[in-house]
Image 1: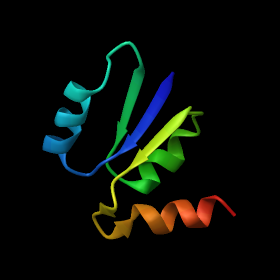
Image 2 (image 1 turned 45 degrees about the vertical axis):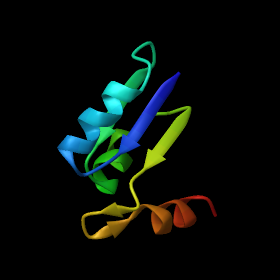
Image 3 (image 1 turned 120 degrees about the vertical axis):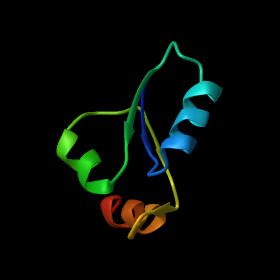
Image 4 (image 1 turned 90 degrees about the horizontal axis):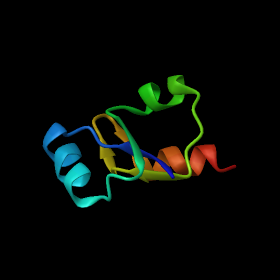
Length: 65
């Protein structure tokens, strides 16, 4: 399973990495733009609500239309 995690805090990224089963491929992104530029497919996308100047909830609303 490929999992993308959008989290701008490096400390939170490390906490998430430690909580999740490492048998899955984890890719961390600090910004929506970075994730979008990856052009990769992921089975699961975990979003931080506050991504610096952006909002994870608003981002997913825009992309799910």
